[in-house]
Image (cartoon, rainbow, N blue to C red):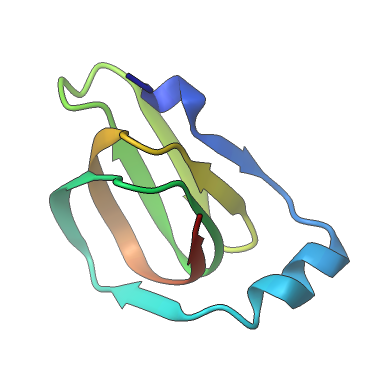
Length: 92
């Protein structure tokens, strides 16, 4: 079972940014909710700030505008949207 440590946060290349801009978008206001990934998700955060916690809240990863984030399939987590977020996303 994947953990928060398996979430990858990095800066995308210019080519990756251009590809991501073709993907659908998702947005959320400040909120906190449980989520479980049933597919691998790659996203490019355009606006906002988020911290994602493990279900027991012992581990976390934070990311924001300009970050590319990859969430593994089968990850269970808690999303804590600190600042309204807008992201382009792709499931694989």
